[in-house]
Length: 288
Image 1 (cartoon, rainbow, N blue to C red):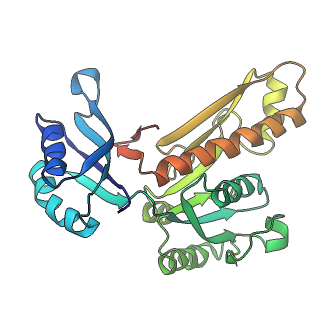
Image 2 (image 1 turned 30 degrees about the vertical axis):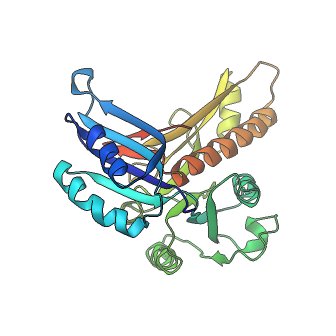
Image 3 (image 1 turned 120 degrees about the horizontal axis):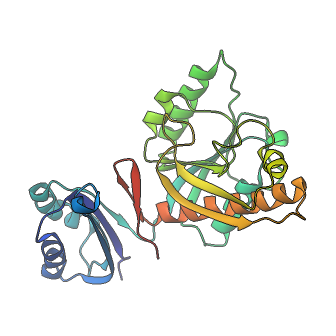
């Protein structure tokens, strides 16, 4: 039996979209396994756009044939759309600096089958023995140093690597280098970053120590798409944890790292399962 396919689409809202899409699938013998939609209504302050995610059994039809057939319907409604195999792992590059807790978690979840990704490369601005302390097996490791003088060349080298490996997703797993505007634009919608949710309240070094000094009661983390606006890209996933007066700065660091890795992993899962659609400067996330 052919693997299920995932159809995602976005277009200006108008009557009949759901009926036409489901009718298209019915006419080709497809069986819908899961369907979600969202109307971002203008009268509620939205963008007046329609979003949909459908998982279906193609009943023997090839993805290529279905894509070709769907092109006419998509053009009629002015859709931005994608049709992908559900069982195909998304080719992913992970970038890391000297904090490897997020990298370790992503690799574990990938190896256990929890994350539908294929890690095609690990990249760091530090040598391997300084960047990671976990067995990465046969995953290629690339040391791409970055200095103010060499940053353009380093970013060009990384773009070439992403093209060579046909990477569909770039994950900044506590990668402590800021992408240039050019690099951010190049990977727009395909690059996910993680940061603690204190930003912009606690910028700079030792944010958890700053938070402890202010007596915060909640810490958290945010996973978002990378844009030219530092740490302000469209948000994919967030989570928080309560803190008490008894927690030391080291406790906040420990709890913060745990939140960071689980928030980043969930954002990667949502992306890899085609559950994240862009809606202007925000996201529509079809959870499941």
